[in-house]
Structures are given as C-alpha cells and as structure tokens.
Length: 184
Image (cartoon, rainbow, N blue to C red; front, top):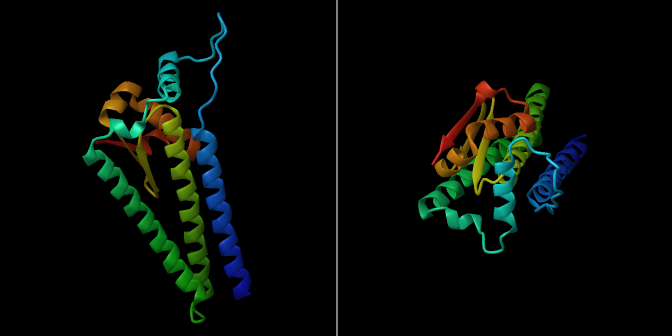
C-alpha cells in the first residue's frame, strides 16, 4: 500500500508538471495573424494589436523592458514562492513515509500536496495567459484568500486591471474581489 501511494504521488507530480509545461508552451507560442478587410473579431483591438506587434518583432525582448531591480524582484519572488510550495510537498512526503502517522494525517498530507499541485498549475497558467495578452513579466500567487498578481506598473497602465482580473477569473475561477494586483 505504501509503495502504491508513493508511485501514485510520483505519477501525479509528473502529470502535473507535464500539464504545466504543455500549457506554458501552448499559451506562449506566437499565433499567426491573418487579417481580412471588414472582418472584426475583437472588441478591444488595441490590446490584441499591441501584443501581436511585440511578439512578431524579431528584435523585441521582454526582458529588455525590465530594470535590474525588477528582474531581481521577479526572480527572487518566484524562487521564494516555489521554495515555499516545495516545503509543503516535502513535509507531506515525510508524513506519508512515517509509519507512526495516523490515517487522518496521511489524508491531510495528500490533500495538501494535491492543493499545491493544483495551485502551481493554475499560477503557471495565469502567468502564461497574461504573457500571451502582452505583459512582459508577471507573477501570480494563489492561496486560500484569493490570488495576488504582480505586474509592471507601466504595463498595468497600458492594459488596465480588468484584463488581469478577467484572465485570473477565467483560469482559476476566483471572484474579482479576491484578486489583488501589485505593481512594481
């Protein structure tokens, strides 16, 4: 039974990681744009046009828009978030390995791991969606209280907070009042 649980946990982690990588790849790949005279598909064409211009330009690099301070912030914040989530998974793994752990503790540990994996996948999908909408860099963090998204101040002025909140709501099904936007 222990071996099955370990294999199940390992398989669940591999599937979640594979899904995250696939979603990241599929949402960030540049889409070919074809325009037909008289055809209109977008309500807000300026956002779509801006995103297409930036991704189709071969000299455009999102990291060049970031200052060194912003690059360091995003790198350290992502590392901190990932480390915190890894600690939850490690603690749960320890509880599952212990023979002295009660059945209730093991069930709680499994549910914690499942929640972390789900949140990790949702966070990655939110970030990929926002990058596909034109944000050069962003960070999302989901917890029990809602979702916090960090974006660049200049880009938030350009794309509006509603775009961020609608992306989070469509991916994670979190209500607008539980979404916090932080700018740097």
